[in-house]
Length: 162
Picture (cartoon, rainbow, N blue to C red):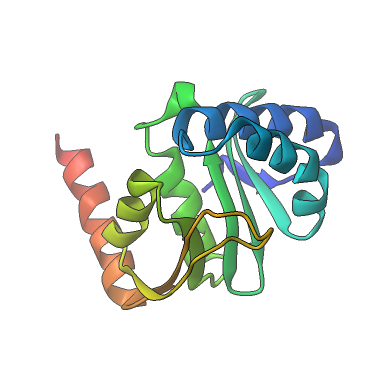
């Protein structure tokens, strides 16, 4: 995973912009005032996790934030969706960082399906998010770590043979 490196502070504005673009492209359910609220909170969110970026040359195409065994955030620049960047970041979190849990907005069906594909299952649901906003959260855990990693390896192998 040579494209994934620890975050360095000079990249802060880049990942803030990436976060904003990604959320605008994927979180259509957010009210504008809530989006603005979360945007103000981003520096706090970022400081509570260990961040890694997916970088191709000088371009940051996605990033990941983890704390302990939890994926706190995973965002991909919308211009690079569907290119395996989210999968690379997730596999890095699983294989290199030992992540086993992630929370996802219930209304973000694409993100939920993405994690489900890699073996995550819903263990509980919260009616509101951590900021007491009316956005239900699905709390996911990796059901079968071996199965998720094996499935990803098989998928990568299929892509190589195409």
